[in-house]
Length: 376
Figure (tube, rainbow, N blue to C red):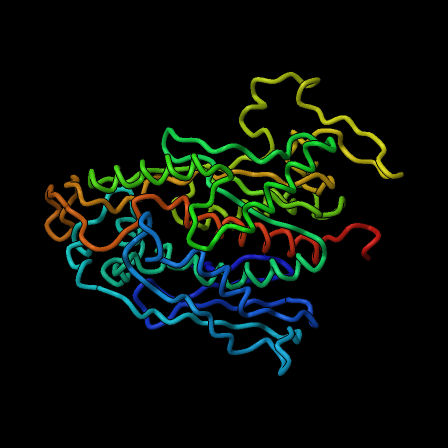
């Protein structure tokens, strides 16, 4: 079973939702970077459960304890960095029926088909979104390294059900659009950790209301998260299977609930002509750059110098309190299941820092492995 990814920057996550602890090991971090633990904790708090009305009631501190990889001054020292997060608020009894009755839409049945009765069903085991916490530890550290290199990464909830937020102004490379994009990033960075992460206050209100209505109806709802990275120089990444889009995709599709991914104009390009979709080049301050960004910051898998822009679709949480049809695996007879326990009615809001973490890890790995020609 592979729970690792990366080429030069290699990341492995371990643990289960209800194990004593979860954690990560990060190999290949450049030496000499000071890690701000307060800043890392603030990043973790944005993903942590039990802090808002739209997340699971399960409350965890999500305080990472780094056990190796830093020197006495809190700087990366070139050796593998290992971190653990203790699980302190588990209720495994809520999952007793699910060993025999798999949840529709969840990995319970697939895990049973793979490992039989040996798999850990409590909280979803290794398939739980709980494992995105150590991913955010690794990603939060990568974010600090990239920030020191002039890269900014931010995400927001672009859609919940039928409710939409405004989009990042990252498809136009004109001065006005770039200025607006900087303002959007500034706005998101200034939000409190427990705020609903949208660019529009009215969108946050509407989305939170819809999530609450869905929760009261014993159901869940899906959404879309949009992420952007600015400041990445042209020339990062490799062609074809070593491209930055593929690097992002591999991590993103390891995030539970992600069902779709698009870059730049995404699936909209299917309705465009080449003349409308192509990004013309121009000279700015003696450098060549695209005038628009329909490609989403990547050409041939290599960064173009434009913002890296992508979106992921997350499905409704499969654990819902409504009665659902399933099968009793012990008797192979039809059955029903009403899920108990504590679950998110919508995972989109807590997926925002996870998207940022995935982007940071993919871009830093690509930069370290396939740097621009003037970085060699």
